[in-house]
Image (cartoon, rainbow, N blue to C red):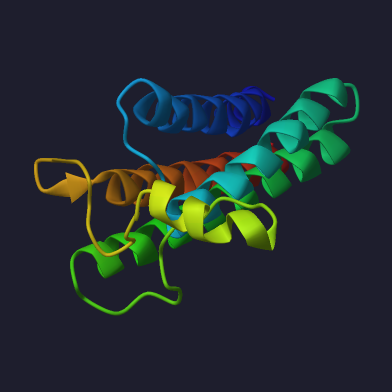
Length: 159
């Protein structure tokens, strides 16, 4: 059952840490997210309650493993979106959106909102380390963790 415990821990800690990093880079570092950045956050947001359910259902290992697996799937989806987004940033392919953020509101304020809203492009990496953008790191880390969770769940199933 150690494999299942580790899978649950990865399923909970990974989205918490990656979302924490994303929000820190936004609110502390001033790196505003583009539309595709938000797309990467949503699966992590879904993974957290799934992983918590896996912990809550520890007494029922099969169901706990199911929820850990669903959390891992959500993490993997975020990873795939991150890899796609990184490809857009590196110019390997085009994105699917206009890739700018806009604030909501009524029609009378629309022009003021447009002028006040910073243009955040999905095809420009606002930050990179060793040539890898935040989207690239999310893609690599999330994909690797999703595969690790899958491997751990398969190992737990055989035990």
